[in-house]
Length: 204
Image 1 (cartoon, rainbow, N blue to C red):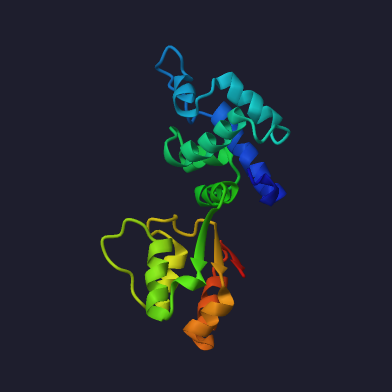
Image 2 (image 1 turned 120 degrees about the vertical axis):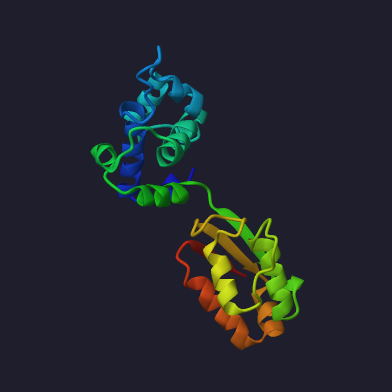
């Protein structure tokens, strides 16, 4: 888990989310014989196991399966499933907005990696064909063959990764790409990629 990539503040927010899930009202069924039954159903952990991890965070074994379940399921279920999650209740447990928690969660999760191979295209049209294959998935229509469309695809939300989800983009054989695409078009593509802060860009 890439916790080393998180700031101290982001690590603190993870602790707030764990505490909220373990001690807050978000997954409690007051009408059930076992009010914490949803914790086991959603998290694969007992309430006691979740609370131990929340109390110890961040002094936990990050590779431990129970820790992985606690972090992933606390954040994903707080964002998408929880009860009693009014803005007022949320703010009692978590100091940042849901959108900020979502951003930190995306950063915490392992980045997806996509590779552009400069040997696979000879011109801009073939480049856009390759981008469609690499950076989109399951579309019933073709993306535009222009720089604006390329910029949109880099933002995400086209099936391969979520909108502004942190990703790693590797462009191999860039010198060959520059020859085939022309220096001007190639430089424009690089500039567009580098404008996206959610993309870790590597070229060789």
